[in-house]
Length: 423
Image (tube, rainbow, N blue to C red):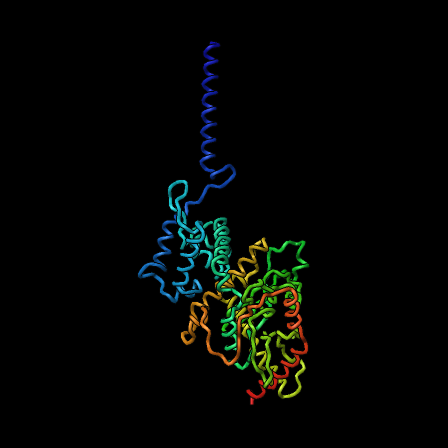
């Protein structure tokens, strides 16, 4: 009987062990790839990749070019070029099999999801049911997308203007009645929702919310020629100007900031100037590189100039409106935690904005002249600055930029010039 009891205990112990092993196996099967991780959702990404192709990229797509342009903010040819370049630049955007042998996301899926995020400003999780990309994967794809766009296109499409660019910008300024103008300068604030509480006071903007400042220069077409992002929102435009690199740049053969730009000569009201300028609002200092409005205009000439300057300076305001209308992510409070990631998103939007303008330039303007090294004939002189830039010459350049007497003289001549056009 004792032997029978021992056998029963052995059998019971064996059964309990098997049940425990089965339970552990069941728990492991319901978990993800590691303990504590939820199981992966079967998202049928291949099926939705085919649906994306059928919607936009097949020879006879469901949605035509106008739908694509409205939803992705750019023409299909430019989108495909970006997707191709990113796949060549970063293997992350190449479709590869996972450990189970199934193909991962295609480059079109990843690029489409990133562009739609920037265009709509939705949460990263909101793209899951449309592109079948989880939030964590989407966050990684967005970071890779921004890094790739900046590496591939920033030096070309958000460059400092070279000699040919200065020719074109001054030609545009001459055409609209502002000889010597390179564009308009202003700042815009981007709300930071997830700003750390310890930094909230430093980043608090005029409306009491944490913001980060974007300083930008726009030409008459709304193209961005300078973008500086990252200053806390408590700083005014002068603080941002002092911190930005608008007057700085690499010491090269052709260095294009106003501080060491190609040599320029233009005439206003019979006087010759060699310092191009930007239109700015009243808060900026009276530098030779700035043309401000007249807050206390009294004479008819000054009133006409004030009206014309403020009207022309709307180019940069219009550019900010275009930028935010095109990329709604800039109109929503930023949910990113990392300032560098936020910087990359904003500058990526600026680069894509310029790429779209370059791609869709009016047929009346030569695209080659706009982009490449073809020098047009202009009624002013712009030559390359090939002198070696030294510390002394750089100091002299800054002294010329901040020369208030030149600013006053230029303002007077522009008032007379605009009055002649007005009459």
